[in-house]
Image (cartoon, rainbow over all chains, first blue to last red; front, side, top):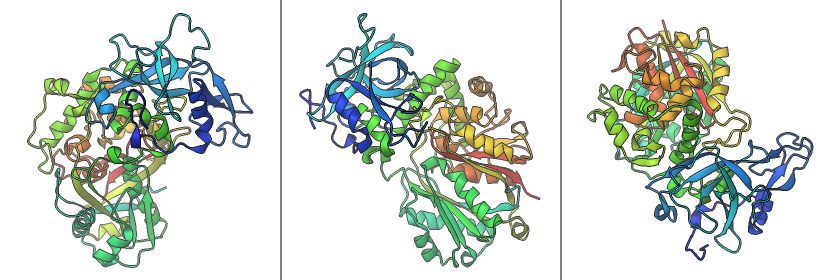
Length: 159
Length: 381
């Protein structure tokens, strides 16, 4: 599983749960998808077979904008595993989605779409706006990452 | 409710080191035999067993090797460092309910020489696919992310984390069994330590230790006839909050309201005393921030005040609430928190190397950040 940039995840990619397939299908098409409770309309993540808010109603999948704000982050240093040992220090973000800030997602910070994960700028801040980008690391697997928003990213910025 | 009906009557441990000879089973047997000797109970009397799901020395092997009696209660508790107090607590419930009479709880682990789980496993359950492909690989990374947010929300700085590391190290310096016994630590050394996962540095992380520990439980009545001063299990609770995830507790409404809050509510509901009455506490410390979050979660200070509480010196011996008085996982040994249970017993027997004068009550907690458990212990008599 090696990307053109040499990003080989190997054993770091655990088995993909069947109920998460729509997320990864969306990622391959450059779009962020999450589940929504069919009864309450509340978004939730990570994916699961049932909605925690109405467990007898099958959850729906919806596309969201990919716009989010930074909730927190960490910067791992060695000892690490390949390929991340060579990328360290890099910033792993936890972001809160614009559609519902209670829905959070992990992803590496990148300076621009296509850039490798790396050290964050000194002014990286909790609350800063970011947008989703998807990095193809194999034909099957496109990884979610987060990059600073452009001024034009008012909506639908996940392209 | 337990309410002092069951006692811890014996404790035992191996030495602690980065590398010990012998298997995890061998170490477990040594610790259990030491605990039975301490209690003055024969192996053939043991009929209850409890350990962690992550324990490699299983109850069949232990019973077979030690010549235990017919075992009528046995259980394993999940979620790593969250399990320790629950091993003791579930065994105590079983004794109180008449399921067994003499129980042994133990944990044996070669985490010092036996490799790092994060480097070989596929991660924690189904959540791993949302974290590990992004290089969020280790428990330190998972907790570092929550730590930065906690600092943001409370205004706490690294000084608060340092206060925890220093309190544990200062206690370990008095404990001949502690791995860090000969290694003094200053605030400046803490602040200069290398990063592991910003904002956590090396000295925010627990030791990597080989070692095993065990304790023996009997009814309060039986304990009166045994050789050691009984330490009573006053209350026990577990906590698995709604919408929580183990280690990566990122998806609840309030990720900083961790499992300790749920556990604390059930624990204090059963107690005949209050947080303010605690003489000493042993708070799970795989990472320094877990101690601060447990202070808040168990009501030992108000939410958002743990940093100021720690920086005031409250956690040190002689402070308002001494914690981890043997050095804890940060400076005595990291054996999934079981050493915290034994130190709670020593405090209430009056035989700790970091003794709190006339200690009568002690809180012992399991890991914050995972489905957890806690005990309130009380001096017998």
